[in-house]
Amino acid sequence: MENVDSPPGDLPRRSSRQRNAVQHAIAHAHQPLLPPEILALAQVQQPTLGIATVYRNLKILLDAGEVLAVELPGEPTRYESAHRGHHHHFHCSRCLQVFDIPGCPPQLEQFAPAGYQVERHELTLYGVCAQCAQATG
Image 1: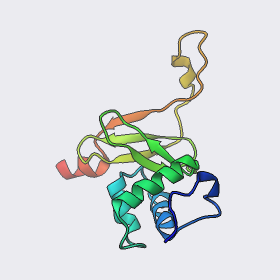
Image 2 (image 1 turned 60 degrees about the horizontal axis):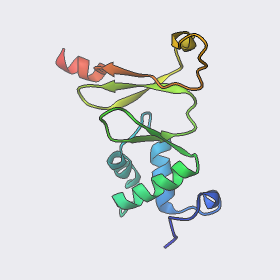
Image 3 (image 1 turned 135 degrees about the horizontal axis):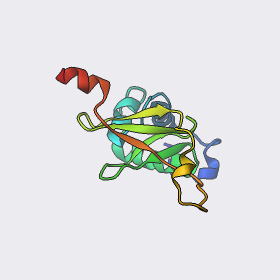
């Protein structure tokens, strides 16, 4: 069995079936995923995959810049591909899922105090997703 804790610099050269399954699950999701969700999706390719292996590979992928952590206040960390481009998130207060919002509102810099320079930003909208809204009619 390959050492999944190989240094990040070795990532392109040293892959494993487990890491490939984790990376595939994240890359093909259309929203940030919790580790148990990553596990369930990755087990389609690697049925014997365990949660500890998911966490080890998430660390490797984070260190290599392939995956980003999505942090929301009071929520466990979710993970998404680093190759999606700039976007924001919507957090459903009923089903607790987090969805990608493409694009970015224009001129967010105008909200910074005079003389401040915005280097980056994160925006999360909170509410009820379309599926939950429809279910409660």
